[in-house]
Image (cartoon, rainbow, N blue to C red; front, side, top):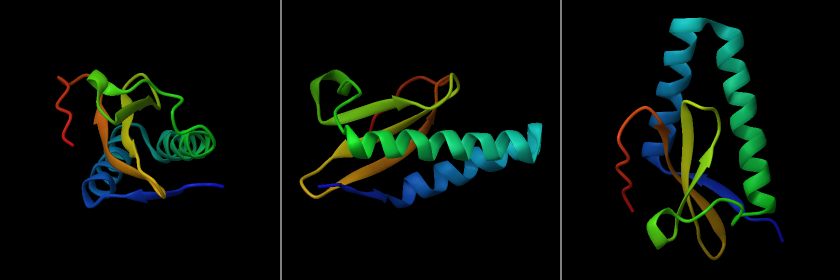
Length: 96
């Protein structure tokens, strides 16, 4: 059984913001590579939802996409909820 991935509105916004930032600073190809890496990682998470360590013992997990960006998600009974994308250069602020 494969779990569906659902993006929260905040996840959609932060994903698009990250893509736009990469595109405006480094061009289309790096932005496309980021999108590809993101979807490859999400496909791995679907197959192994608990592959990343839980954040501070709660049900939120953080997967590293690139050195600069992580995906923050939660595994629920019938789907994986992508909460938001995080710039790793910032201080952590995990919201559940």
